[in-house]
Length: 356
Ligand SMILES: Nc1ncnc2c1ncn2[C@@H]1O[C@H](COP(=O)(O)OP(=O)(O)OP(=O)(O)O)[C@@H](O)[C@H]1O
Ligand SMILES: [Mg+2]
Image (cartoon, rainbow, N blue to C red):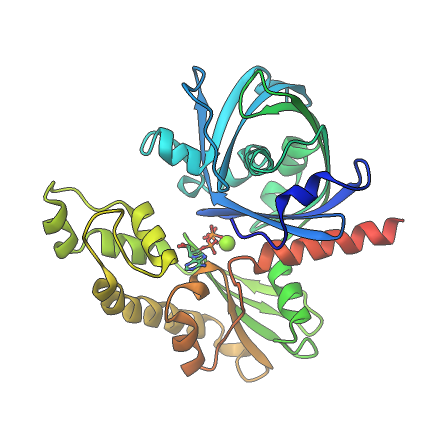
């Protein structure tokens, strides 16, 4: 978890204020950005869910995941059920769980689970009142479903059935197109010229999405490439013969360990002796090259008019990517993994301010 402030601060100050919150439910990583007492809190967790059919032997804690028991509330289908999310899922059942990357519809179906799992990693509060803005790649398909699944009151216990109850009240204020949050974040950083068209490339886990915004910021083009996102790079490393030889089981490596090795910057595979820096260095250039070529091809007609070409998404934070993008005159937005969630949170704050 990357916190702009200590989570402790989430529980002090004004009683139960509405918290403007941005929620980016990615196929690989769920990002939640909320504001409490003027402080920004950033929570992320792997987009994984597991229903617990029996109580845990011991309470599990991680800054990148949570455990909640649903007592009562507007989601009658969840009453008396309990779930793990994020890293707790990979600890408890590394293979037999629901991955939101398996089907785009799952991002909506499990949106509430991911929000509750994220809150579970923060200090206890009796009440959370989230004023939520969320993004989706298809408002036509998911707008109503997201409203139905998220909105309302949810009485839960974080950490297990017998823990103190929290009342989580969610009002879903807006469902915006994927990229709207990142655009707003990038604009605030003065990294794009909003008076012209803007081309953006989202390097995500499952998808690489070229997008084009009109002068002013309305989305006019959004089409994921047929080729996959960062997961293809991780899987290529997982299947490399050198790693297979090291593992000696005949099975591919664990992509979660590879993701952690890349994010840690050391390229160590788990806690063993295998280092895959040289594999990454070899594979990353072709991986990015193919995706940039395809993204440029599909956005060719806007290229001359566009005042800025930027990239966001967690892929821009992988080692060497920002530098490689710069050689192609593409500006990588800092903290690209968070761009969308932080931007959505800013949109939520602006909507809330307009109300009062
Ligand atoms: N700080 C970081 N350093 C290195 N890599 C990172 C960092 N943050 C995120 N990534 C990597 O970026 C990749 C994409 O992450 P991102 O959060 O954009 O995907 P997503 O939003 O879940 O996927 P999608 O957009 O396809 O739904 C992941 O493989 C992740 O490991
Ligand atoms: Mg994403």
